[in-house]
Length: 426
Image (tube, rainbow, N blue to C red; front, side):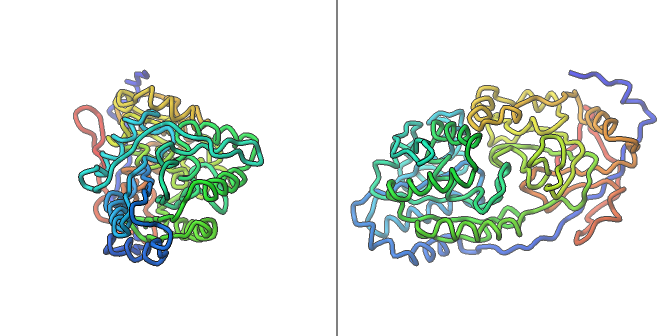
């Protein structure tokens, strides 16, 4: 761990900061259970789902807003058809790649058997239902494979590592989520040889054709991490509708108010925030680690991660995309869970530990000393809670002239540190 007492000199001046609020489009579903019921009713599932049938419903690990309420509404609709619903954790290798860990993730989101009114059947076992034309075995959750029907529910949003007509959403839930740890490992390895869209189309075709998928429930969130759109989708329309909903999700994606940024300070990262812990669609670095490419919309010269979210349960995947962190953050890391997730995803760089400092004060000074000729007091610094919540943040005074469509709530005021040399969270 670096000791940088020379950076703590009394003459060192940190920039003054302003608290701002950004304004984004804010379409929102007000009555979530009613909307879920209306959407599923459009599909006339009673024509396929008979009384007494079992229906597996997927639940992921991405920290989806209102996930417990949405899942309960899906369960209630299935019950209204006289069928028996049960939940399947659909999250690849998350939760340490164990059934107990994945059940715990769901319960941490309020998705409990008591609240939902349906059994959670958690297992890491899969069955291989077929092999794609590329020679890829299609893994499918053991419990879901025994159901009479499957409903795939998931959030549609831009992927953190791929760009295409389909990124994260219903298709990814069928591949990575229901493929569990074994499927996730194989699909991430296959990406080395085949395109993401090629794998998605071939595997999804098998799952839809062979695994009794009866419906999808696609969720799109607005820029304030609220449920903006819920749409029930028939299986044969998954590709077409997810492609359209992805365009909407990209339009709604929250963004940083300025670029370039000398230093982006992130209070917390985690799997409940993004698949990569910090969303590369927000901070850049989607195509090149530690550097903005010509396809990124934002350039963060340096990133400083201050900690992990409680719900990530020590999974620090994505911390390797930052250059700086603190010992406090490192102490929160569960190495086994992080290693499992990064290796499964074929992204070992995501778990690499950045330069470690004892305090935020030292980390900030050290980071700015690496960005060029800018003085610390004049540097362009942005502090955010996480990449999912960008409505309010702190920006340094040197950024003011470039801000647009924002409200200045407070400041400028001195960047303040507590007695331990640490910032407070946004």
